[in-house]
Length: 200
Image (cartoon, rainbow, N blue to C red):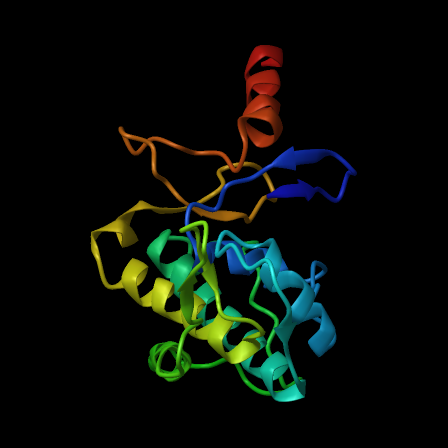
């Protein structure tokens, strides 16, 4: 995805997996992008899932999306070994005013979302794979939750990383062969670190 940092710099970022990509919809302040159901419907086609048709979403879907996203954030932070690290933000919770979910609740949130039917795959006359439209927000969230279960219950959970850049909290799956990826993007945090090293 093409992201814009708080400083206005645009850079490419690959979260490595659908569930971590979903965090880019605004898991932490001030980056919230899901303010109404239409935002969720517009955001789903931007993901690696390859949705090219309409997505339907209602108010309950928005609440479910934020709850799922917060659970994925907390699980990812734990997997990255960043839980309790000073400066790592807490996820946006919905509805407002509720206390943060205990760890066990995060797993229940994932399981409940994954229990819904996922998007229905179809094959077209050109033999290309697609989806039956409209895709519902519930189906999209189910796909995200199933991806999260695959990630956090398997060996790839040890490859979840948080960017090592100063004040950068982007989380990604390290898919590099040696498992040595440290930065959200070499053109952003990686280059900044190189400049700091050069100056020092």
